[in-house]
Image (tube, rainbow, N blue to C red; front, side, top):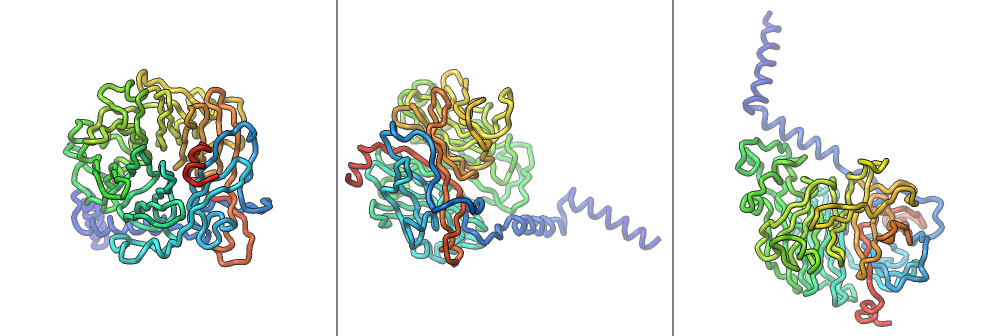
Amino acid sequence: MFSFSALALSFVYGLATVEFQVFPYSVIKKAKAAYDALQAIDTKEEPPHFIRYEPDADVPGPTVSGATADADDLIVMTGGFFYRQDLCPDFGCMAWIMSRDGNVLKTWEYDPKILFSETEFKAFFGYTDERAIYIQGSEIDSKGNLIVTFQGTNTFPYHVGVAKFDKESNLLWKHIDNSHHWPTVGPDGRVYLPSAKLDPVSETILDLDEPMKCTYGAVYQEGVRIRDVDGANLAVHNLDTLVRDSNMRGLAFSVRDDCDPYHVNGIDLLNEASAAMIDGANPGDLVVSLRSSSTLIIMNSQTGKIIKVFFGPMVAQHSPSVMPNGEILIFDNLGAGAGEERVGTRILALDPLTENYRTIFPIKDKDATPPFSSIAEGAVNVSPDGSRILVAETLGGRVFEVNIKTGDILWKYDEISDIAPFLGEEGPKLARLQTQGADFMTLEAFTRNYGE
């Protein structure tokens, strides 16, 4: 009877611990968070962004196929530390510019040990050496300089920062400011960045009568950071504040993870055509992708005020890209399925005026084998004339160039690198790595910035 009574009391106290969150609830909660963090540690020996070994590949470099004769522009590829060490032997290519036959015309390389110091990571936990920090996104400005964002694996928080390099790979400026995902550079050289900060867990979501169900002990509160051409901070538009002020509380309520209520993962600027389709918007205002609520928001670039919310067809999307005709391209990670006889990833074009959308890629019965799928990440960019798109299937390590009107694949690219130098082995050891992004560059822009 004594044993039975002790067990019954323990059971009742256990229920009370959960219901009223009394001791040892907080200890158990932290222990669970620690266990989850340990389970999430990446223990593989290969570099970040490794997908798989490619034993049938012949040499490092792209495997390309498709039409190249009619192309009148070049491709800018986002790389990373330890990418393409056949071209950038010391540290790998952060980015490069190439023709469609795989001929690389320009590269950027920098020593990550010099770029990052231990003192800059005092507020980070986990692993913060140069092998844990990876390049997430890049963009080239109108002067030919490279802007790069960094994230971390086995690092908390994973948002690291941003740096700018000149044409010769010299560091111009750097900020460990929790920037992440892909940078966007405006025509005036301003840099727009998804940005995060850690806040303590609150009792409720915003000021709603709904408890916050975050077990990690901290919440990623995100927004948009704007820096000028010299790297000076111009503004930070914090979404937690903007959602309250704009009376858009549903953006914070309808999420899958209270620990990451917004998850900004892509930014672009409205052009004249797109701004004319949205009441209250102006050219230069921002279209911002929020993964957690599967929404796009239109944000005033000066004040951060939320002007418009688009919701519905896309699921966990990335990489909004404004086309010359005003439509907004979306890398829809999980939304394909209804009526399309497939489940996976697709590229959407959203009409801001009618809020109708159409699938650009892949088109049924067109070639996209093996199946096009990237359940996370991914990027899409449009050519200056609006006729083609470059689709970076990040988790597949592939890029597709697609005709917008027909959905036909014009060019395919597979990212193969020799990772033997990273492993400290005799090469080659060829592997497929993730493709974080691909963009167009006109021949005129290349010649203007880098010469013939």
